[in-house]
Each structure stands twice: as structure tokens, then as C-alpha cells.
Length: 474
Image 1 (cartoon, rainbow, N blue to C red):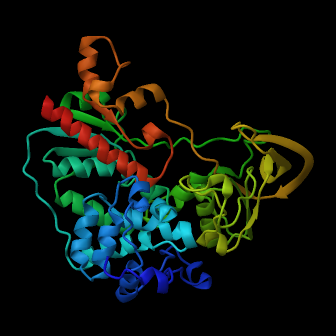
Image 2: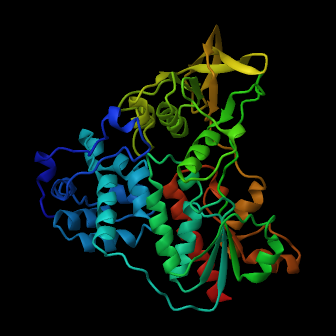
Image 3: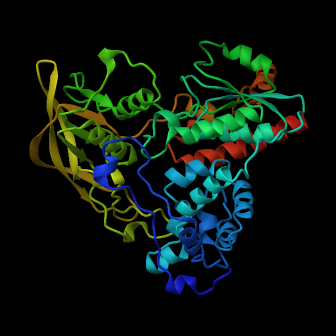
């Protein structure tokens, strides 16, 4: 800890966003960066706590106090080497992680000014790429082959860890390009796809094999993969969106959120979209149902299309600002989040349940909503929802459903595959089949359901370790 009093005299300084009038016209990243001197000053605020809650809260177990101190001292290369020990892709988490570490920072809990851990992390990795600290590593091969199905954050982390342990790793991806939801779910204005491309090039240089436009079970038979590899990892994510099966659901103009987001990202990649499938919000009244990050991403995308107006509704009550006594630490704080997309223009409303979609012929014109009221939980019970009878119609030309994702099919099997081989109890009693299933593992959202990128990466790292143990013992 180089400056033990910095936190007393130096306030938190965020890099902030580009001006709204500038960023609204493009899909470039909205977040700005501080110069290296200011970044070091921000790192000096870390108190190197005796019990570092930031480290405890991070799914990856990042050693934040260590690399904050190295950053403060200007030892960027060493800071990077400490960071890479626990995080495979700081360039991703440094941009899109909700920073569980910052929510647990003592300076957050004491004065609501946590260390800028996430931004500092992004600064370290970008300096490492810029200064050439990162070069391809060529591991000694051990002659064993592993297939990873799915190239999202969990699959990429699994592949990188196994490749660097000497395995020949092949990543199968059903889409046109690798990255999973990093590429086709998260808008470019939050994560530029050149950042993903840079990492993929590095992984290819290190020997990872990527096979895109390839769905295991369709283009390649699952049995062929089972027979050809010493171990298989299922990292297919959780991509089935939650539907809203109310009256009028089939009207033209109602889409799942990812239909808009993935299509926009494909267009920016130069991938051709059939004209009849193109979704354009220009001049339209846009309504997003769902108040989370995916809904926020739809807000930003619709604004960049030139929507006439954008409304986002949520069935849950409006959360408190800055502090919520119902979710005090160590729980993740459920507080009002105003994203860069919201700042660009959006009417936000809460406590609204959708009753029916309304249309003129087959074309959407709006949705009837009803105000609801939530009762406070008693003795640990779940909050109860009550209808108030107060209904209204919200006009809309386009509606995007952003209500989360349902768990993948075969939940029991997938969860069992996420366990170490010696802890599996319910997979096959037939010895022949048992031999096959021994070599299959699973990780990421396929196991947990839709979650955070940082948790998917942590799951991928853990699964790579289990695969390594399994193959070494074998």
C-alpha cells in the first residue's frame, strides 16, 4: 500500500461517457478512459484492507489490492501479470462486468465511493496489449484432445485454460463468428467487437482451433465428437428467452430483445440480413418490457436507430436510489440503475403488468397494462403481487420482450455434468454409457441459467481444472 492516506484526500473519479449528442449517432463504445496518471491516482485509493471484501466478492478471485498497488506505483507490466493469473479476459470484464468487487469495497460500504476497480482493470489490460506485454504462449502438447461446444465467455475460458495446459482444444460455435452473447448479445457501444477479435486472434496463435457455423448434433454428429475427443465440455449458454403468452402475442411488431440486439450486431459485422427480417426502430414508438440490462441495451439500440420515443416498463417496483436496506451488504444491492442508454432518452415506468397486446388487423398498435401492487414479505415469505384494476393502453409500433431467459432443457443432466466425475450419482448405471458420460462436462449459463459474464468465466476455469484432473488421472 503505497499511499495509506490517499482514500482520505482523493475522491472517486470515473472516466464517464462520451457526450450524448456525439455517441447517439454511432455504435462505438460510449465509455471514455482516464489518462494513465489519473488512473494511477485512482488506484492509490485502494486501502489494501486486511480482509479484502473485493477479492471475496469476485467470482474469479481477482487479487485487486495487489494489482491496484502495482498500478499506483506505475508497474503496469507486473500489475498485468497479477491480473492474468485469475482473469482470462480482463478486456471483457473491465468493460461489462457489474463490478461485484466494487459493491463490496470498504470505501463503497463506508462512504459510497468505491475504488474504480473495473476501470482500472480495463486500463491495465489495454496497456498490456498496447505495450506488447501480451504475446502468444506456445505450450508443450500432451497429445490429448478436448472439444468445447460453445464459444461464449465460459467456453472461451475453458478453452484457454486447457490449451495452456497442453491440450489440443477445438471450439465449436453454431454462429458465424465466435464469442457467443459477447458478440451477438451485447451491443457494440458497450463492448466493441474488435476487442473480441483481438482475443480470438491471440487464442488462434496459441493453437486453439475454432469451427464456426457448426452445430454439434446437426452439422457434426454428437457421437462423432464423443468418439474423436478425450473430453468434451458443454458451454452452450442459456439463450431461450422468456416469452409473454398473452392475447395478441402473434401480432406483427413483437420481438424478443435478442432479435434486435443480435441483428444489429450482425449488421455491424457486415453479415447480410434478409430484407423481410430487418427490424428498424426509426420513427417508431418503441416499448421494452423488462427493466434489466438487456432491456437497457434495447433502449440504446432503438435510440441509435432514431426511434420516435422509447418506453421501458417493469413489473417490479421502482428500486431505491443508492441504498436499499432490503439488500444490504453482503447481498448484491438492488438499487436504481441508470445506464448510458437511459441517459440518451427513455421513459421508465414500474409496477406495470402486461394484459394484452392490441393491434389493427395483424399490426401492433399498443399494449394494455395494469398497475400492480406488491405486498411486503412476512417472515421470509416471497412478496405477493396484487392487481389494482387501474388499466391503460401504451401505444407502440414495436415491442421488445426483455424478461430474461429460461433454463436450458435437460437441466438435471447438465447440472450433473458440471460436477467432478467422482461426485456424479445419477448419470447412467450402464457401464458402457458411464464410460462415455465420464468424459463429458458442462459449465457456464448452461449449468446455472442466465448469469454474469464474470461468473461464466469462473465456471469455465473451474471446469477446465476438472477436465485436467480427469484426463491426468485417466
